[in-house]
Structures are given as structure tokens and as C-alpha cells.
Length: 458
Ligand code: 5AD
Ligand code: SF4
Image (cartoon, rainbow, N blue to C red):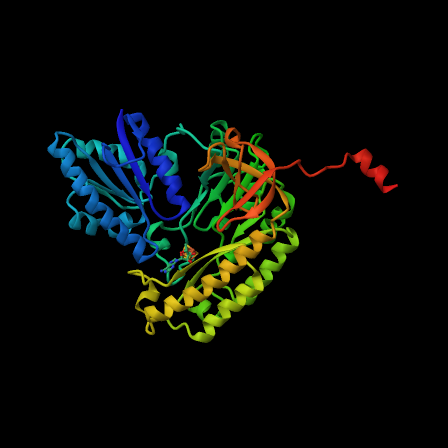
């Protein structure tokens, strides 16, 4: 067996792609390992969304080059591949800056990895593939999935046509594309057969999903969710990431209808100022977002909301930033991600006048994160004493302990749950830790039999 080490940066779509690359290389005799030192092949699956994420890749490549040299001196060999969005955006620069890199492959062409490895191994030089090939990547990926844990990711949609002025995604992942319902169902059933109890449907713009349905007509995400909810053994569904513009009535209704759809929604708003939202080309106003949140909460009262925020977008005034804080106070998030604006090459906002000084970004980020952290704490605190269904995912740090997720995506630690990985149990939350909850087993909530109910009503 050859040893394959994959390091994944960035979003969950990269996590999915890394798993598929491992599936693709399994028939060539590559088995995943946890450390790069002795690996025959190393893949860095990279993220280009912010400058920091992209820069990490070059420092990691420096370390890998030294490892590769040591291995070559002792008679071995190591192939180094850079995949993902940095590969897509900076392929030529990577090749020029780092001679130890053998393969550069973008997110739309990694199905070609086996032939690229063969080319490099024949000694015909380095291989670079960063086009958007005409063939469907998903049609060329292996049907066999090597494994799945209790929770799995399934990419249903890729790319973005929204062109927010700060974002590289439309350039690195290309135009919106949706897989067919049939292809997704087949993959979901395989994941369940391999042990998945929960599937998160992924897409850069997942709620813009328009894949071909069984009748050949485009299906919506709402229809896809209803369809997948019929799969026996699949207990939980989630989806991410959504754009406020694509949250239609039917998708909102699904949250109140489909029990398997978990009450958690990541709905990035980015900021609360209409002036900045327009400059970002978000195509919605703060008021539209607040109304949307109200409608979603009407459909599913206990839904936990999450978001992404950018502070220090070009031209953002103190007043604009105040509007963001005000929106956050109005919504009340269960959790959220927030970032300093990072100018990305090739995006319209990167050349805008009135870039914001870093010290202002730092101060605004601290203020926003202070508020978001307080909201997260309050949400977690509100769970104390409640009983909720937890899907156990992995062993905890203490012997016999296991960690799972609540319906609201919070990590939950339970002692004595070590042999329950992959099981869903009711847990009563007893304490709130900084980033997780701790609980004990509880009885499921009492469901009255219809007969008893009607007697009680008499
Ligand atoms: N600078 C900072 N944050 C960004 N994001 C996207 N592009 C940038 C950028 N140039 C954030 C957005 C998005 C999340 C995935 O990353 O908030 O929703
Ligand atoms: Fe980027 Fe905007 Fe598309 Fe999200 S919707 S991927 S932020 S361009």
C-alpha cells in the first residue's frame, strides 16, 4: 500500500472533495494516513477565500519540500499535489514559486488526478490542470465510496453566479451547476449503507439548487430534501450555504414539515448597512433579511440561526458598522462567523477607493465578535435543563466519553456513551462549557398514544 496524506483547508466543500480524491486514489493502492512525514503522496486541498488562508499554503509547501528532500535522499519518493481554490487561482505562481510541487489541480478537474499521477511518474515533468473541463466531474468520480462516519457531506451544487464584489468563488469554482436528483439519491443511499445517519447537502449556493428531477424538470432544494427524507436509515438532513435571495416559500415551509431536517440554518448576511450591502452586490437589503428571518421562525419556532459577517468592507463608516451590530441584536444568532475584509486579486472591491485601515477592522471585528459570542453563550445557556436528541459522532477526550451533535449543531459531551458512536440518544443538558454542552442520558420526550390523547381531551 502507498501512503496518502491529504490536508484540507477552508470550507466543507473542500472536505467533501478531499474524501472523493481519496476514493479516486484508492484503486491505485493509496491508503490515507494521518501524518505527512512518510507519505508517498501529499495533497494540499486549499482555500483562496481570504489572503491568510492562501498564504498558509506556501508556508506548508516549504515544510513539505524539506520532507520530500529527506525522503529522496534516503532513496524514497514523495509526490506533492496542490488542489483546491489556490491551485485554481494561482496555479502558475505555485509552479514558479515551489519547485517541489509535482501536480496542480483545480476543484473542477481533480477527477483527472490518476492520469496526472501517471504522467508525473513517467518522468514527463509536472502536471497542471486548472481548466473547467466540459466533462461532468461527478460523472467521472468512482462509484465506490471508501467509508463514511455517522455524519457525511454530499455536494449537490457547485459554483456561484452571484458575484458579490468581495468574493473569489465565482472565479475559482465557476458558474452554478447542480447535480441530478437521481445521482444525489444514489450517493446518499451509499453513504447510509456505509454508516451515515446524517447528511449535510453542500453547495456554495445550495438553495439555488436546480438539478434535474426524475421527470427531467429542474427540482428545487425543497423538493430534493423531501425526496431524500424518504431514505430509510437516514435520520438527519442539513444543508449549507444559503443565500438570502434564494430562500423561497417552499424551502421555508420544509423547515416546519420535514422532521428529519434539523432546526439549524446558516444564512450569511455579511453586514447590516443597505449602502454596504449594495456595494457588495448582495441584492438584498437589511430589512429583507429581517423579514425573511421572521418567516423562517414562523415556520420553525426553535430554529437556530447562523451567519457570516465581513467587517471593514471598503467605504464602511462607523454608522454602517453600527447597522451591522443593530441587525445582529435584532436577529439573535445561535452562532456565527466573522471576518476582516481581505482584498482578493481580481475581485471588484479589491481596487475600490476607501480601503479601511487594519486597526479599524481589528476594532470592529472585536466588537462584533464580543456581541456574537455573548449571543452564542445565551443560546447555549437556554439549552440547560432541556432534553434533546444527540447523534454521537466520535470518542471524547475522557475514557468512555463520546461527543455528538444536538439538533442545533452544538457539540454535546456525554460520559459513558463511548460505545454509542452512530447512535441517536436523548440527552439532558446539565452544563454549558465554553464551546460545547455536557449532558446525561435522558428518557425520550413522552409521546402520547392517540387513544390516550383523545381520552385526555375528554
Ligand atoms: N474577505 C473576508 N471575508 C470573505 N468572505 C468571502 N470573501 C471574503 C473576503 N474577501 C467570507 C464571507 C463568506 C465566507 C465564506 O467568507 O463572509 O460568506
Ligand atoms: Fe461568494 Fe457571494 Fe457567491 Fe457566496 S453568494 S459564494 S459570498 S459570490
